[in-house]
Length: 302
Ligand SMILES: [Zn+2]
Image (tube, rainbow, N blue to C red; front, side):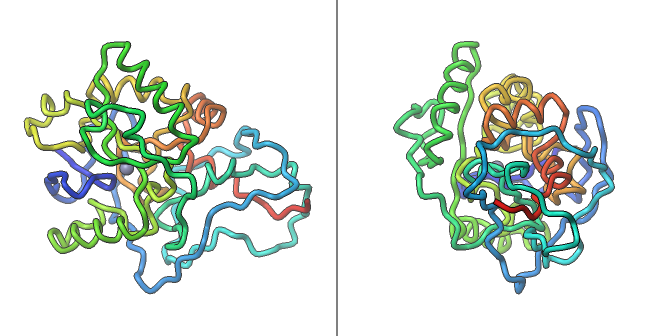
């Protein structure tokens, strides 16, 4: 069964709506799909970015303290408030806290949203650094810190004979809202498997990229599809899965984390988290969200 999920798509991208989800092309693990978690529109969306403590030391990824289980699910209601209420838990020094590296590790799932007011302040145009053969002419913005590692990775992919495409980067809350409403009007019964609602897309962070491959039509049979689960079969997808961590990128929504995150498998969607974190996740076989949910920042004192 061919599946297409275009949470990260550009508005111009052609989409084919799949029948009810059955992620068949599982590389290894399989999951039991459940209906997408639909944030209720009247839920206040707070600013959920992790705020580094002023007394923090430079972020150093620590090994997870627990092995996440696939049965852990987000809370069913969208009253998610990642900021913990103080409890009787002993409060330790903030130096021990696993901190966002300038918000690089902010949690985004369908229960952990981003404020509509949040926008990165250091966005730059990727089109100044990569040619149209890579961006296909799409205007793409990313946070400045992501540009150098991405350009290096693209350069190395090209040198290896690959033809990577960068199809999408930063998307504002309002841009995501427009895209979501567009999909909702066209496919009202399927919108939540096509597009993330505004505030629930990692693309709002400005550190997330959707990659493409010119090989994709070989697997889909459709030259107009740019986002498809079969990206994982392409040489670009294979290379990214094995190597992206060396440049600081991690696959956000692996097949096996759907129940945890509410996001379907997106083999094209990578997020920059820094080389150290990305390598640790790769070596331990974890997604960033799996790591985050077992390493919630605790209250601490500076
Ligand atoms: Zn994406």
